[in-house]
Amino acid sequence: MIQFPISMMKTGALLSALVIAAPGAAQTVDLTSADGVIALSGELLSFENGVYRIETDIGELNISATSVSCAGSGCPEAVETRGDFAIAGSDTIGASLMPLLIKGYADAQGAAVDVQEVAERTFLLEAIGDGGYGETLFATVLEDKGSSTGFRALLAGAADIGMSSRRISREEVAAFRDAGLGDPLSFNQERTLAVDGLLVVVHPDNPVSQLRDSEVSAILSGVITNWDQLGGPDLPVTVYSRGSASGTHATIAQNFLEPFNARLSADAVLVAGNQDMKDAVFSDPGGIGYVGFAYQADLQPVGLISSCGVVADPSAFAAKTGEYPLQRTLYLYNTNREMSQDAQRLIAFATSAQASGLIEKSGFLSYDVSARAQQATAAAVRTAIEETASPSEVSVMREMYIDLQEYERLSSTFRFRTGSSVLDNASQRDLVRLIGYLQEQGPDIDIALVGFTDSDGTFDANRALGLSRADAVRNKVAAVSGESGVDVSQIEIKSYGELNPVACNDDFRGQRLNRRVEVWVRR
Image (cartoon, rainbow, N blue to C red; front, top):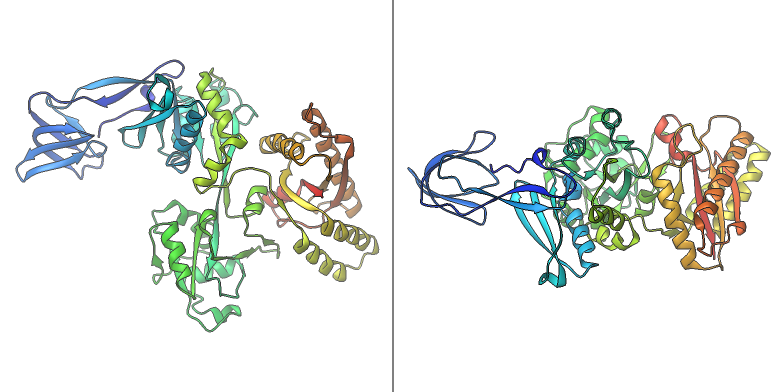
């Protein structure tokens, strides 16, 4: 395999890369794959478009340079190309989203992007001005070999931007700090890029619209084989799944199989990707599978019921708020090293409203502010009123019931760092998005910041705590609103304490989700 080792790069001005030059006279070469499966010797006839053409004892063969390394005097010589900054990390981001973002950033400057694969999963992207007929504006090297490789590249000074489909680990944070590379949890080094989510889906005519985690597990593992076992029609269940090598399958396994010591049914029908999964379930009245949000189409998403009875809304809105369990945040990271202007501007573009369309085009969810009516939540509160004995709690529930029918909720949701009054990074960026949204809406809407808490402590104390958090967010809105025209004095603060939990309160993750400040608007 022709290596493009990111550890050899130097961040800052120029980065060295290897690109294959045309060979001279034909000579013997040895081609070997990293796993040793391919081991060939022969006369190199040509090297064009990243493909070796060699004459061997078994005839003429064509071998991709991304699959093998080359040894011998006949190997093509390396020549140098240059990039201005390097990006490394998650293949989830790097496969399609990051190239689209780079092209979008270049397009905003009137440039076209030329893409060259210079090694296995390593690309040189060159932005050429004047629609591809001018001078090179910038060039970047993109390597997408996994989130961990991005953090290692940042630590080694081999990349300016790290892509990750998970949050940085505690050990990686310590490594950054020990190396004097700043705090990767800080606002200027950690950025939320997009949301990646999965939906459990069934045929649109299937009346089973909610399932417990244990029931999903029993379906996937083949314990439940007919929908009538779940109150549905007398119809055999067909499980559609991705293969075991799929990262999407791994997410499903981690949520529904491993916690129950279960395995995927041997009768499951394996499909290649989201589109095939969508087509298979839609054509099978008894089918069940899982797809990314962008592939829901006419399928029916299944609400997931937690162990404490909270139903996770299977919607893009819930994924944006962080309250849907089958979602993950996609991140960009950098160190405190100085970056080129283009690297800085690319990050700014990628995390701005300008990039939202490109993010959605890639099948992910952007953080654009969206609104949702709350009648369904109001109905649940009305049921709770009938089951609650405390007169004081019923009074607050009635107040909330009325508000839920009048106000929409925005996807902007504010949460605080553990044990502090400091907003987490995602919430700080939501502040900026919220200001922009309110500015677009104008003065003719009523705005309320509504505080919620976990269930620890007394009802009255929690309501007071929620109110103080809502007030803290209003102060932060005032601090960043500047000359936006948003009249902060007209923003009302409310609190409903521990009411309307969005997750179970029996673990740290659930409690953190419940400690939130929502934004409600009345038009």
